[in-house]
Length: 97
Image (tube, rainbow, N blue to C red; front, side, top):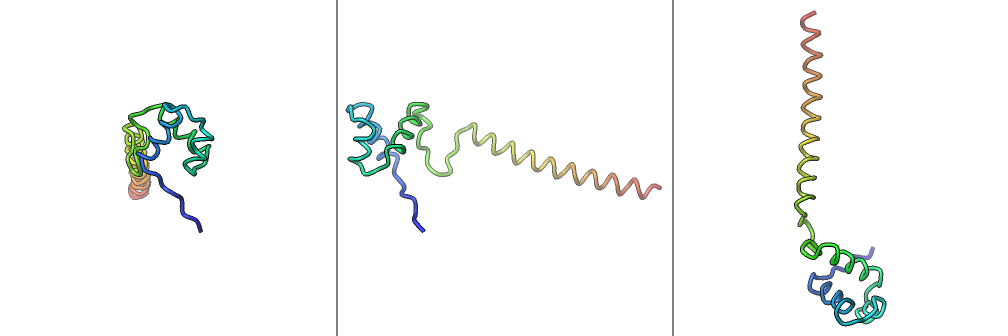
């Protein structure tokens, strides 16, 4: 089993600068750094789409992702509570007969 190599935010930003500021092609920069060119292109796209949110690291969610996670958990809880209430209503309906 191979483990995935992890790169620091600083490494990624330096790699991006080689392409965006120093004029290296993506393939040339990737080859010099010993990384996959597709990975470098993905880093550049992520950085260009939103600098402030790029390379947050594991577990650091954007505000939208955190809200979505919270809403999904709340939705699961509400569905569970609804099922409990349905069963209770059915139980008490049988009791009153």
